[in-house]
Image (cartoon, rainbow, N blue to C red; front, side, top):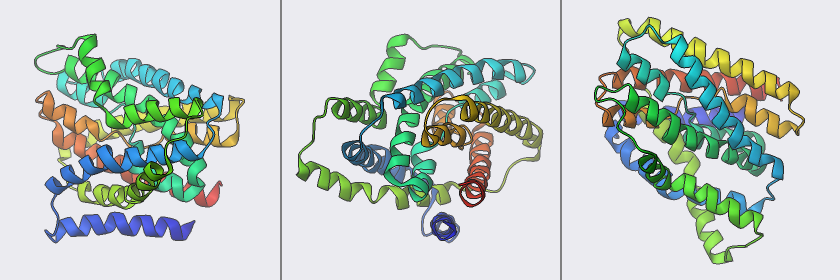
Length: 300
């Protein structure tokens, strides 16, 4: 497992140094991200759901994530009530989890296809949190205020290719409908690019510079996010009557980095805190890597 983590860290570091050497730039990450979210990640989902049997209990995973997202937002409104309006909106937009880009490579190294299946279901819930709760929060606390309608939210959810792939793949799996072998073979080939591309992208977006005035709000946010995530994660791990992989998914899932989409939302809503959001995203990636390393080497 140490060797697997070493390879992962090396690929992330490669992405970072390619940026520092100006061989690649952060703007190149936009193209890589589109390839991941629109091609390789959906291909990985299709292959994963085609090759495993989904237990009925896994349907509970996205429900737990969605409920947790609602609870986090409600508590966050209280925790950050004294912050400036835009800063409050920034923190609430960060309520989702980075599953597809960050977790999948590490989870596959630790648990293989079974782990990917569980975290794929976890990511379904994350999609609803990100494109529903976080998006509404960001819009509400923007300068223009809430301008969304239910139809707009549904359209945004419908445009999420990973989410639609999850839903379609789940329906096919439960219906015992097998896709043609040729289709699965092509998807399998494409899916192999997901892990290295995701890790390179994480490296491209790593940035260790941040403004000093953000130190206090960043510490406050990180304490809230990881404190609540650890508390709820451990509680569900010990009390849920499901198999160990299910409980591992909940525990680790709630300690994953913030969703990268928050930066996109901040630009859309004309926030001035994009650098703060990017900094928090980078810090949570580093923290979560350490957490997963400790987990895989000293707990599993």
